[in-house]
Image 1 (cartoon, rainbow, N blue to C red):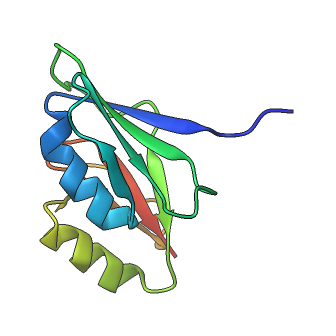
Image 2 (image 1 turned 90 degrees about the vertical axis):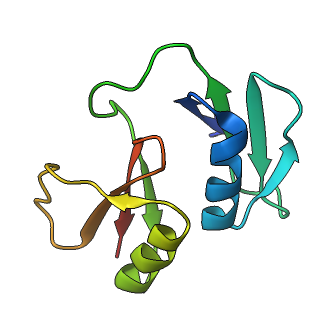
Length: 114
């Protein structure tokens, strides 16, 4: 039996992204001094860890995998995430009206779904 233990997101500056993702998900920064990666955990420890991992290469194209964040208030959640530094991802085909596609401050795409 397998379970989802962690999601790892490649980035240029894991410490900078940690605050944004921690606030977005209600996670806590486990240890921001363990460069080249920073782990985010939820206090209930029933949700997967989010690991932000420093990589040397810049993001160039669309993510091959992305995170979907579920909510009953998609527009309000997207507005809150924008206040944390996310931005609307232009050029992404929004084929389903229940999706809002955003990108974190380094351009990593994710969806807010209703």
